Amino acid sequence: MKLYLPFLFTVLLCLSARAQEPNDCVNAIVICGNGSFSSNASGAGVQEVSGCTSEEHNSIWIKVDIVQSGKLGFDIIPENTSITVDYDFWVYGPNEDCSSLTTPIRCSTTNPEAAGQSNNYTGLGDANLEEFEGPGALGDSYVEWLDVVDGESYYIVIDRPIGNGGFEINWTGSAAQGTGAFPEPPEANSISDIEICSNTGSAIFDLDNLKSLVNSDLNNNTVEFYDSLADAVDSNNPLANNYTSTQAIKTIYTKVTNSITGCTSFSEFNLIINQVKDINISFSENPICAAKDVEIQFSGTANAYVEFQIDGGTVQEIQLDSSGNAQITQFVGQELNIETLYTYVEDVDGNVACSANQDGIFTVTIEPIQVGENLIDFYECDGDEDGKVLFNLTENDSLALGNLGDNFQVSYHYTQNHAVNGTNAITSPLAFENTQTLPQEIWVRVEDASFTDCNAVSSFLLDAYTDAPPSFEVSRSSLNFEEQHLITVSNITGIGTYEFRVGNGNWQPVDQITNTVTFAVEGGGQFTVTGRHTEGCGSSFTTVTFIDYPRFFTPNQDGINDTWNIIGLSGNNSNAEILIFDRFGKLLKSLAANSKGWDGTYHGKQMPSNDYWFLVKYKEVLAEGSIVTKTFKSNFSLIR
Image 1: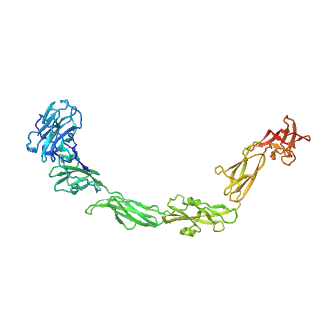
Image 2: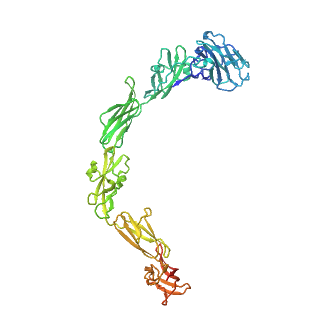
Image 3: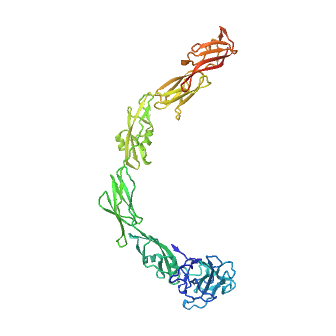
């Protein structure tokens, strides 16, 4: 990762002191191009400043080399915005030497709180042409611009006598515009993390070999490596070319310094120590259904060698690639065991850098598939009794597949030999007509569509019947004498599908949810309920009786409705009592249940057209089977 240095940068003045810190002129930080940096600098170092009636307390020295002429200014902006935090600065140049510094050409030691300022900023860029100000309440914290010329250099000392915290510096003026006032920094390339295998957790890294990767021009630039960015900025404690690390991941900071301009650039990368990984083995398919080639995938440490045995045979060796993977193809005809024995990684000289014993055992098993259980034996109706029946064999598809995956397919065959060999499949399983006298055996084959050696076979029977009438029960869903009677057919059993009707009415299908059929009938008497096989394989019937009465009769001797009587009186009601009255309550006739009925006369005299009343005493069979005696009365019409 590259670490750039822009015009806006931060300097920290709060860390412990170290050697070669930039708080003296000779250790000044050279400012170049664009980027930001941090520093370990603290304390005053050697007292070298003069002017503006102050001295160094917590200071940092920076050097700027000018490559673009114009006015140059800057704003020093403390991170701590408290008005009590005070920053001072001095500027030396142009082209001063650290060993013979003269007096500064600019300086400001104004205290912002004492001077009543609205903030604690300070810097160059004042319009009132002051070159020096301070100390204390004197001044406004800003002095006049610098007029700089290409080729000049200046030293700037920044000091914090009061308060704490770092600061930002923002370069201003015409010299800072465009390409900027300072030289471009050298290239510090980002490089990939460096990984080494080690059993001990410690490794030696050759940093010298990495320098040309960080910067290819080593004639005009130097490359150094550091533990921290702050160390790199201050050039504190550069790392040795053969660097020993004991951390699993160690971040290293690079510093590239241009030999001509003194400009620097920074980047970072990681040193990674890996211990050799255990070897893992996976298979392209496991278990397998039948003998076949299987891809065996080894995975572990990048570029490692792996020693292994197959079924206890000769020790073999394979090298993993840079991604830590390798693959072989092995024919598996029976259960196969692969045992990993040893893995190791070599260094560039071919010596074992790290290794580990292995004891993994990985097994490929063979598990033949089976046709699913509970295949249907078909039993269909041969209604015309010609011995030929259509069967939908595909009703066995899902049962044959069972829990097998979507890549398996089903076929049907005439013989076991055809099924085993996968030949002569039945071409129309949706509507297959038997090819021999029933019963006929049909064979089913289940196979992997992409590997047909993986298969299994089984069989089922086809048969037919010619007479399978339904068994059912009929119950009355309403009582006698109701205007409309309901008949319910239930508990329907048999082979195939059935339909029902009452008398000569229309055939009705069975409700598949309730397994019932309900009919509405009018009038009384005996009703015949017939059930038949929908494909013509037999029928059966039963009867049900309702007691009711005619609403009128016409005794005109035409043979139609010439008498009146209660309909449906039989069995328990053979002795029912029936009485007929005129509208004044006069008893006109007493009838027996089995008589022809009333002919509309009283003592041989024809009664006139009118409404007449009746009363009947009868026995009612209730739904739960109990019998109760009931009386019913109503009226009917005599029409002449």
